[in-house]
Each structure stands twice: as structure tokens, then as C-alpha cells.
Length: 79
Image (tube, rainbow, N blue to C red):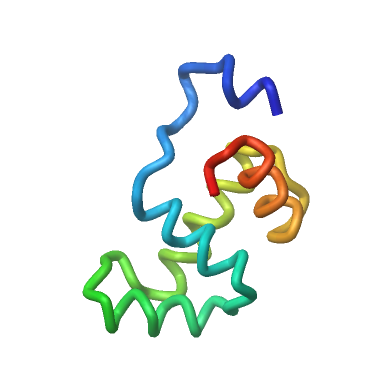
């Protein structure tokens, strides 16, 4: 986890990412997140775009899966 705090060359966590992580932490699946984003007017809101963003976050946090990603985000205080 400390690698994410030290390496300044990595992406910045945006409001979009935090919203996405919050919905994942509530147990929503990809299609439900897409519908929620569409209803709130959040873009990008396509399933493919959301899936790509989740994969980028997994790489950023070096998480193995979505559960691990949420746990790491919570541990770092992102959520």
C-alpha cells in the first residue's frame, strides 16, 4: 500500500473513481453501476468504460480482484 502513496507518477484518484469504488463496495455489479451513473448523468457511463476504469484502479492499487481493490482503497482512506 505504501507504494501507492510514494509513487507520484501514478494516476490521480478522481471523484469519478471514488464514486465507482463506493458503488463497488456496496456490492453493485457492472451493469448496475452503469445504470446508476446514467441516471446521475455521470460520464463515462458505459459498461466497457467502467470496466476499463476498474482495471486501471486494480493496476494502480496492485489489487488482485474487486474485493481486494475495495479493501486496499479503504485501508488507504480513499473510501
